[in-house]
Amino acid sequence: MVSRKLMGVWAVLDFLLLAAGAVTIALSLVWRAPNLLLNMVLSPADLTAGTVLGVALLVTFALSIGAIVQKNHVTIGLVILNYVLLIDAVGIVIIGTFVWFFTLKERANFHELWLAATPQTRLHLQDQLKCCGYFAGNDSAQIGGTFCSTQDIVDALPSNITTNFCVTPITNFADMTLNNVFTTVYGFMAVILCLLLASLCVIKKRQEDERFKKIDAKRGGRGFV
Image 1 (cartoon, rainbow, N blue to C red):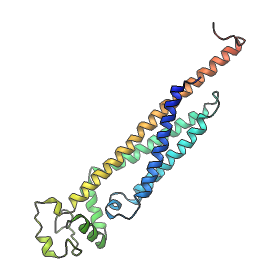
Image 2 (cartoon, helix red, strand yellow; image 1 turned 90 degrees about the vertical axis):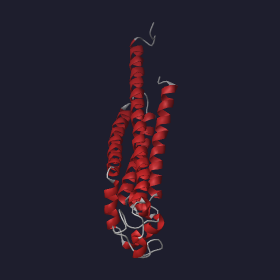
Image 3 (tube, one colour; image 1 turned 90 degrees about the horizontal axis):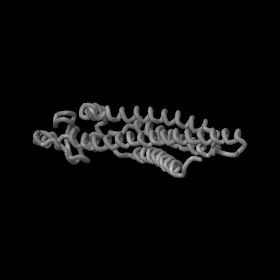
Image 4 (spheres, helix red, strand yellow; image 1 turned 60 degrees about the vertical axis):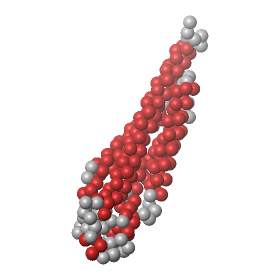
């Protein structure tokens, strides 16, 4: 019989899988709310990928419940679960690595997004972050709003104070957000791999129990001496 300690560990890991899926979906939905800076850092495609990952983890959790409640001699459910966990692990690596790779060239990547943004978006960001332009005051600064209201104000900003230009506050926020995202996503890998190992242990123990039952039956139910 599978020990209570092993099943307890398996149950805790399975609950963490459920929590990971629920948190991923919740954040992917909450972060879709209108927020110019957050919407620049996390695109709709990023949030869709997060939603897909969350759904995949919840589906895996549902599959795990169906697999674990099977009779001892039926281990095919747990075997299928392990293959699904491997697929989840691949998805986690892909998403986490994509986010991490984007952080390697944040200043250049967000410069492109800044240039692609509408004038109204740049105005709102400049007012929100108290900055003008991206790398400098003459780098796509949008004149207007409350902070960069005139060209003279923009030209008068000291170039040695980096916070006067939007590259610094934008990349600071992006660095914090994206680092937290890919660290959390990679953290899900620990849950996936530990649950995979626990499932392998359950499969092995159940197979051993069934083997001993068959041997015992051949001996007329007398058991081992």
